[in-house]
Each structure stands twice: as structure tokens, then as C-alpha cells.
Image 1 (cartoon, one colour):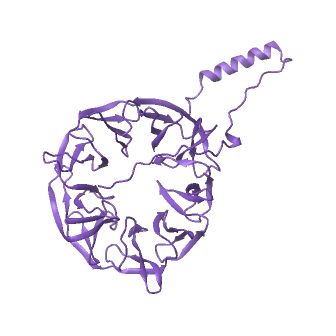
Image 2: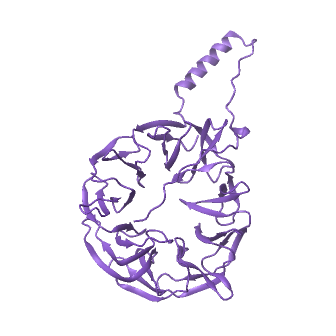
Image 3: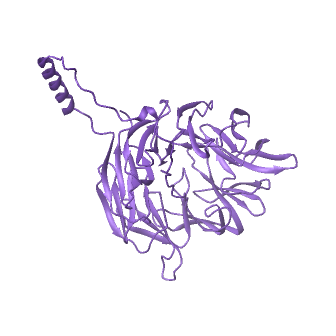
Length: 435
């Protein structure tokens, strides 16, 4: 199961409100305006008011939940909420209830894939051991149960069941015992690959429409690439000694990129995901991370962000003042300001590194929103929380409106924003990305 930590939006910034976002003031007509003209103006205003567009930000659904109750949003715009022993599905288009069902145990992890909601509970079986339940997103029925953790692989309908190893690498990266491919409809094991000791599990891209592959890096650095449909071993070899942490290796530009030490210093090497043949090696500098940024790969660290071409390892651009980048639905966000390494700088052009929109002083809302981002900012000594739309074509975010004070733990999808209120209630907001 692929997990990501719930992102809590920090709404405690005391940066003040930009001058360009002050509330507009009202004006009055001069005393000398003739009565007939005043009447005409009133009629025009009344007609315009009748055809006024809906507000840019409006509340459409409020659910009573506790602050610890988990929720998630699917890619097709469905809100899934677990609270008070029930699990409910809501349509974010019209806020209608899809279905509601009881749950067998509290859940600490929600994930979706292959038309299923995967629930991981700490004590979901009679023996008190953790269990994963697969629930149909269509009607809420339980399809099957497994004692293993279960993960999805991008580009493939196959689910992978595994026993995690809890270590500095993080749950979901290092596995033990075996990796089993599951039939999403029944949960039955399709094929299994034994893991004699422990290994790092990673999904890698396949050519054309053949789908993704599974890559296992074993403790002895023996690497194997398996077909996800059959489990067949397609290639095997050895990778250099490395830390194999949560973000190493990564897949970017269709290649496997690995940071590793050499006698000459730390380097980044690229390997073909099908043959495991090494394509190129370049110095890593002080980079401690590699992430995709458009068609390029970005090396990030205390010495800045440098974009490299995955095809040959050549450097395309470099920003020494940045500390990291994040790609979301094709939008690349740069981070790192004098005030903090995690503060957003702006939306960047992945091909050139040029800034397309200024985000300094804002916080980026987690989730996906299509070709734009949602951002928040506080002012008036924390009494006002603004939410705005940031798009690559805009020099600065466009204000949508104000959120209630204390709003946090937000997620976004196109045209919808879901946040927890101060009371703990879950609130769905409708917004218009374009004025």
C-alpha cells in the first residue's frame, strides 16, 4: 500500500496581507448626478445583480466527524470518510451520499486503487493482528481480506501484498518473506516471489502499453525486474552499494536513478528499467534527494536545485537559492526562502527553471487541482485566512475568499476544497478556478 502522511496546512504565518489583496472600498455617486441617470444606473445594477455569477468560494457540505477520523479523496472526485464506526462515500459534484456501511475496526490508513478502497486496521482480525480489507468503491461491500499490507503500482491493475520491515527506510519500501500479486476482484494470489531476507520494493515503468514492472533490490544488492502480470523475471543484475532509503532509488524520465558513494565522491547513476544496464554517471554534489520535475530530474540539497536530463545526465538549469521542488499534475513548485526551507518560492517552468508565478508568503494545499494549485495565507494577526488559486500563467495567486479561522488539514481536487474546521467537522467547499 502506498502511503503518504496526512499534510496539515500551517495557517499560523504572520506575514501580513499583500496590498493587492485588501478588501475593496465602496464609493457613492456625486450629488450632481441627474435623477433620470440615477434611475438608469439602478436598473443596470439590478439587471447585473440578477445575472451575477455564483461566489468564487462557497460551502457545499459539512460532516460531523472527530479530529482523528481519517478521510481521503479518490481521483474521480469521491470523498471517503470513516467516523463513529461507519464508512461513507460522497459525490463531490453534488455532495450526495453514494453509500454508507459499518466498519469492523478503526482504520489508520486509507488508500484507493483498482476500484477498491484499501483499509489497514491495527486489530482487524480475531487474533488481534493487523488486516487489510478491500472495499468496493461502487457499493461499499467488503470484497476480501488479507493479513498483509497491500500496495498499488501506477500503470498496472495488479495489487502487491507484502510484509513490511519497519526501519529507517519506512514502511512500504523494505519488505520481507515474499511479494504476492493479487487479483483485485477476489484477493487471490496470482503469483509469488520469495524474499529470503529483506528487499526494497519499487514499481518501475514498462515500454509502451505493457504496463509497469516490479523491481526488487535484495540485501546482497542483487536486483531483479519482474513482469507484474506473470511474475516472470525479466532481468537481473547488481546495483552499487547505497542507502536505499525512502527516496533512493527513484524513477524519473523512464530511468532508475540511484545516489551512491564512490572513491571519487557521491554520484548519481542511471539504469535502464528493463535491462538494468547503466546509462550514465554524474557527480551528485551535496544532493540528498532526486525528484521528477517535468521531463527532467531534479537533484535537491543544501547547495540548491539542479535539473538534469535523464537521457544523458547533462545539467539543464541550476538554482542555488532553492532547496527542493515538487511536481503535482505537471505543475512544478519550487521551495526554499530565507524564512524557511519548506516555504514555497513559486511555480517554475520545468524546462528552463524560470519562475512563472510568485508564491512567497503562501502555503500550498495538498492534493491535486488540475492545471492550478490552491494556496492559503493568514493576515490580521491570524484572524483572516485567505485561499487563492495559483496558475502558471498568473504572476500572483488570484484570491477566492476567506476560510474560517483555524481551518486546516486541507486537500484539494479540481473545483473542490476539503478541510477540517476548528470544531473538527469536515467541510467541502466549492470554488471557481477562473473568474
